[in-house]
Length: 68
View 1: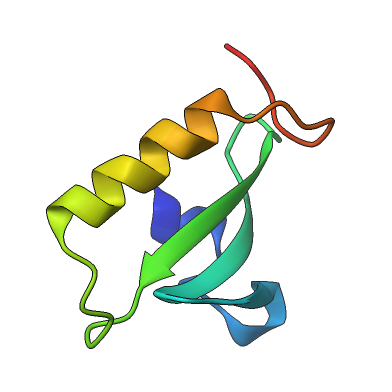
View 2: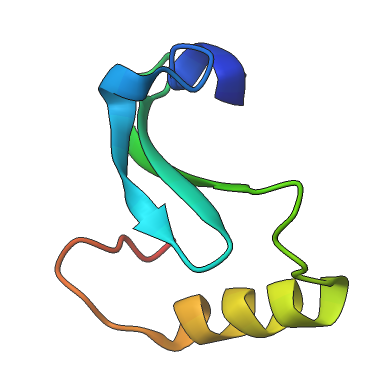
């Protein structure tokens, strides 16, 4: 589903690069736009760092982030 939404992580959908990978724009089947971070194989980011990032994103309040 994520590969389809991002056009198989197409460079045309690349939004930018972050410390541990690349962020892509995607569109789900229902039309909802999403951002997907794809971790680099050589990122060195472990499961704890990933969990910390998810917790941080959950706490953020930004006009481009949707609460569910």
